[in-house]
Length: 614
Image: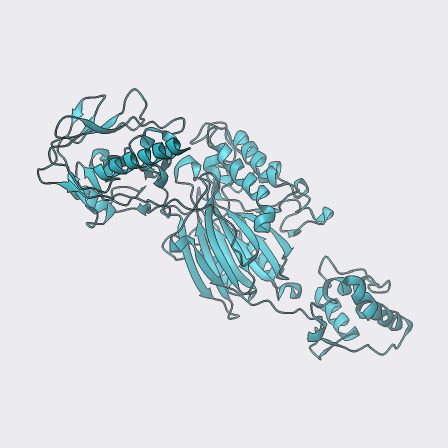
């Protein structure tokens, strides 16, 4: 045992000496930026993972396979322990694009050209010191365990915090694609030089903890952004399945009550020659169907259509194949005939305009209205009629539609693609959301840039409405697997917004991805519709008058002769959450029917019935 202990101490001493000696490594690589002149925006970050300062004078950056060698680093240049420096061939372009001069950077002549499609046989970046020794080299790739640079934005690759050493950076599994909000990565669109993501000069040294539900959360809902770039790719289609499997598997831990999809389920609605990707439209719909079907019978999900879900490739017309692949009956938790959350549709049997009702575990009643891409005026008018129903006056109403909030924190002003015009965000606010006091949320996607936007506005009923853009489709792997979660907290009036990726096991930690939102406080519901302080036959009559057009009301000419309306009213409204908040007075029976109703009333609210409910 003693010799084992001595050996262990010796090993620790050796490791400490190595660490103290210094270890300059390649920690981030921007090899395929989105730029008109790529060479101007390629850069490499190097990092001193040791504790001692290193003299970099005379070092060179090289492509060890192609034999390209940069100019020597200037004499006197040093790198302190835990310090980074960015190497670039054009410091002016770097500063213009990344909009910072605080990052330590060095311009090198003859900066090596980095391959856009690196492989083991065509790209090895190395650092050679002044004595000719290669101090670190990375033979990076974009296949296998290496991050794929396949997004619309340029994205660097960077080392995980737990892999900051010269041996770990040889392995693709230890590198991540730059993702805004993670480990210091940011989105930039500067100087007209393209859209890129990276963390130049910022090296995260502490790994994130596994994300978990907040201890003060009662229940959650999930938001899926545009999934078109998963569906269109035979490689990335599995990412969407990873997302839905996570929602299914974490349903109980996070108490996920439902999922909303913001639209652009697929990239091309109806063509055998896709505009991008390697999947026909039928294959794209099948891919989306397979991934979302993971939730059938597990979690209800609500679908909106985007511009790419209509027409041929991009809303050339309003035709959509959504209803060829998805039906309410697929998911018993959605199907009204099986007790699901769907309450009605604008057009029979079609899901692109529909509304849903959810009774949350904390007692909050939620109404979700899903509207098509650029909603037609008739669909908007229909949505108004839905939300204006008295039964929804105390609900938390949510609108989910594809285009509403822009990435500059304003509402969109046009929804015209391929000649198909419709209502945009401004229109929907003015004609629908602001006019109905129950609205508290709007979720949308569609817009690029950083894919984030937030507006807080007061409606005509003094209701605060949180309007949010969330779209990650332009990142690598079709969107890097991001899901937005809204946790409804136990104070009954606060929602915590979080953004997580089951694909990487990471959470976005920046403020715009982690918000605390105030919503209406939970209130005890009362069936005292006429507000006279008592619940009785008069309230039933208010219900009959107000809900005659409701699917719950008996609309026969002889309605209520069989007690159907009363029983529906009793079931839906006659059991307030707390008897202490409502007093009850029985109506005087003036006929046999009224006497029967009073008897039913006693059964419903009497002590024996209350005990049975317990």
